[in-house]
Image (cartoon, rainbow, N blue to C red; front, side, top):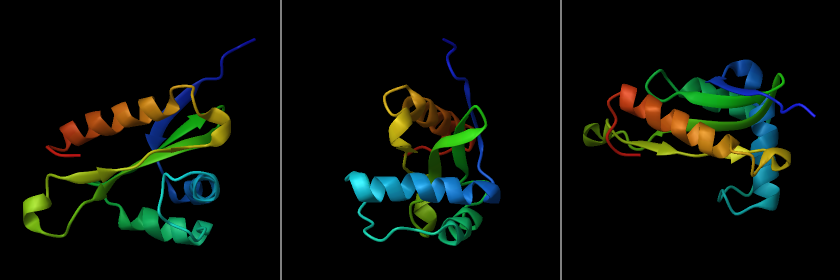
Length: 120
């Protein structure tokens, strides 16, 4: 049996539906989010477009399929929080427990350091 390989890359608008699917699964089955209404691919596309180079969104891909995602999101519009970001991590239920969340978290931390952030 071969182990599936995964990579972490910057999310694109083409990932919006997969991001929505994983997020909606979390809304339905976990307490990871306080959202109670599921999101559409269009909702997630707009959300992706609101993230900039300083606040990127990454996806974990396994064998060409998005299996998790994590953003650096703006914490506040106040200038004193320019070096602060909020983080989130979502992994599809079928891939939880395999280190994908940890890999996404480590990637976000490294990216935040590169961007000069001091608080996550």
